[in-house]
Image (cartoon, rainbow, N blue to C red):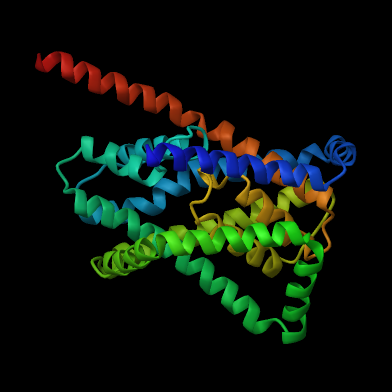
Length: 311
């Protein structure tokens, strides 16, 4: 019962954040910006997202799973897209990472511990890259510019939104502080179990994955005829990704859109453009995630046929 209530809360919270964004802007202006966008840039933006979600996401996990057992890439791909479907489409209490592990376990004799370890190591690598990128950005950017970033953020957001974010973070850390500590400890323990080759390949593919995210954001901005420097785009991606990992909504619904909107606003991108871009990106994510539904139902039929054969 508690899990169901928590899941309902996350869905309502995410929708509330989306509603807040839409309330904060001029909707006709947002629609006008969308209609006048250069479609020639929207296609490569969507293709970049498709490539990183449907190919690079399983590819960066593959070397870690190869260390755990003799997996085929097709197995990792299937598990990855099914997890994507759960994360972005189904309001389920089961996360995408857990679903990936479950699908992989059904297709192998590898232990649960080894599969969970690979999934945690994949998360740790991505998180470390993003945190390091954000830190380097802030260190090399003049200190006055850093202060202006945070001052602009405080001025750009309304006091209501700032209180919502602060209170949500406080509640989250108070309730889940023990789980957060345990999760971080598990992640570092997971990374220590891999050899240099496996980790190097996983890091290499993760770097390409994050680089393609920057490219896709660049294309989205060009759709609206805006440009940003690559280091600034990297910082925005890092902030959005790290904050979106906080599980306070389903599939980071509302969280990702708000963080992206206000992060881009720091660099002079109008709210109507940022919100429109965030919503387009969400639609692309959902549509691509639906591919996982095909594999999900195939997986169900496979398990059903196995059950019938065993009768």
